Length: 130
Image 1 (cartoon, rainbow, N blue to C red):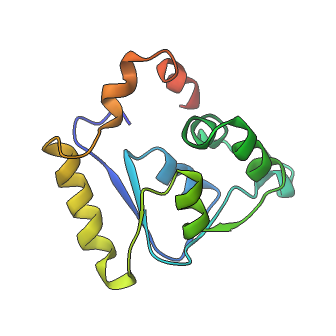
Image 2: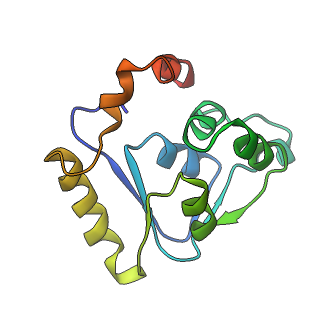
Image 3: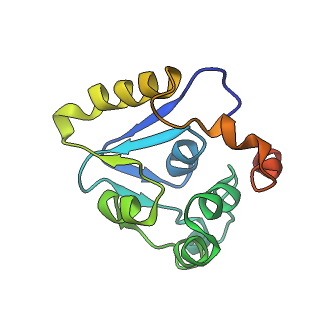
């Protein structure tokens, strides 16, 4: 999230645990239909250690994030889009093309860039996630 260039996650297949946490650290997330997303660490007796417990609530709200994390709930990309942490769901064959388009749109100001939100008090504690 501190990159001077936009970083967009292209999620195809599974983004589980650290994979989802890495995607949450990106400026945007584009996923293929039915990609599986989860933070299963609590079911394994550990806490998500790469910032998922900080980043997910900032994207979807505390209630939805708590439900997903505490239950180690696995969801599909379509539900992640409805929740607000998957920015777009695109066909498998278009995933990389659309992810690059998102990055270019952010770079050229056609889509919002998380860095513009760093002025708000909500984002100030993202350093806790590192």
